Image (cartoon, rainbow, N blue to C red):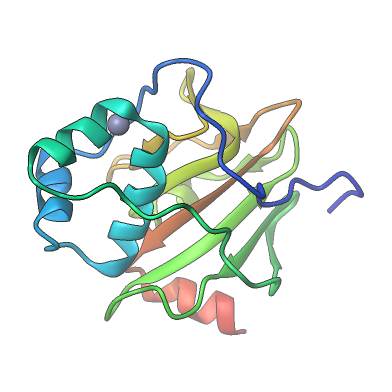
Length: 176
Ligand SMILES: [Zn+2]
């Protein structure tokens, strides 16, 4: 990683424009009921802290406002591919689930084969483009099973985010 590697933000900043990637209504309802996994709940909290639309939706379902966001601890970073590093977030995930921090240098490319192995990714700094679509701070992005194309990190800012996964192969990579 270069000297200007992107770092986890010390505080979240509101998105500059309306977000384009939101949790599904089903996911928000499960969150409001306390019926989703701890890792998924963590990502949804990050999203609704930045998304008035989804915050209003969960409040209308009777859920209280989420706690203030705290940067995950841990500096156990390892290289995933050139310009991209990952670090596990300990003690926040449920059974069979991993929560992982990811950071990418400006312009770094994450192959589709790796992006496909994430369940959901929330962007907390910078952004990326994917098949011509931009995703930026606050967006909660799910790759889908047909994910083939690479993610390209923002050319000025790179990106930092959190993803959840149930793919046990990440466990091998994070504990190697
Ligand atoms: Zn939203």
